[in-house]
Amino acid sequence: RQGETAQFQVTCSMMEIYRKELRDLLNPVRDAKKKSELKIRTNKEGTFVQGLKKSPVNSYAAIEKVQEIGGQNRTIGATAMNATSSRAHTIVTISLVQLLKDDGRTKE
Image (cartoon, rainbow, N blue to C red; front, side, top):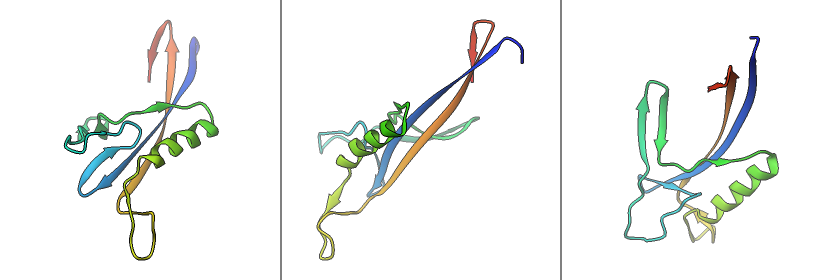
């Protein structure tokens, strides 16, 4: 439409599910006694993980860097078959949001 300008915002998040608990791999809880604050929520826009860190990225290299950081925080443990086996499920999310500026106002 006339007068609208589009911009894009790209973010990347990384979490794991380990022993029925969600862990933010980009903002890990360092104290073993402290529980993760992540919660699965649903609203009119859909289902999301409340409290999950979303890192802004602007290139494929930036996404790789986020994955590298998150990978260093994964839960691993040795097994008879593999010395660095992960007992968790890792979820990487890349979000693309289009922002429209119309007459000075920004909307998604």
